[in-house]
Image (cartoon, rainbow, N blue to C red; front, side):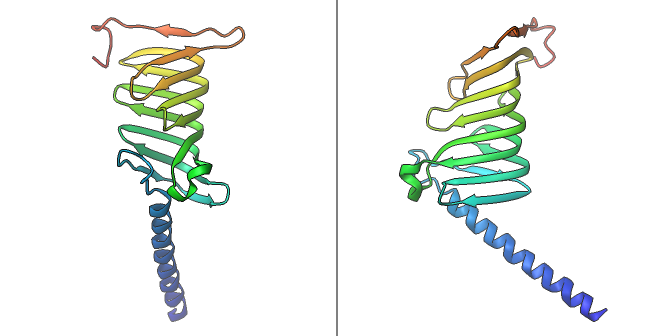
Length: 175
């Protein structure tokens, strides 16, 4: 019994060390001194794999990222660093894969895949895209949205067409 307690205690200590190292790695990864504005990206997930040489951090499992007033959730989140400024940890783009949900203000977008370009603040959503803006719904295959201007452009391919449902304010449940 004493041996079991010792093993449990050692595992708890190791877990504490791993957590501290993980937090340290994240602090180094997300020091955004390359941005003109002091902004951070906070990410939580089940696992994190860092490929420093490739300038890539991959988060897997119940991923949630917070950037400014944007919340992004997905199954997998890949953060790519700008090749030219790896030393500064400047993020080039974020790719979200699987059960993607982006929420900003009254906008909610769901899709299977998304690419977020931080320099331009543009997000491109692909496959099974649904935009809910103030209760009005747009569906299509491809959506480009700017998180600063709130401009959005929806497209569909092939025989699929963009579908929209607009509600009068009195019918709109959100307003």
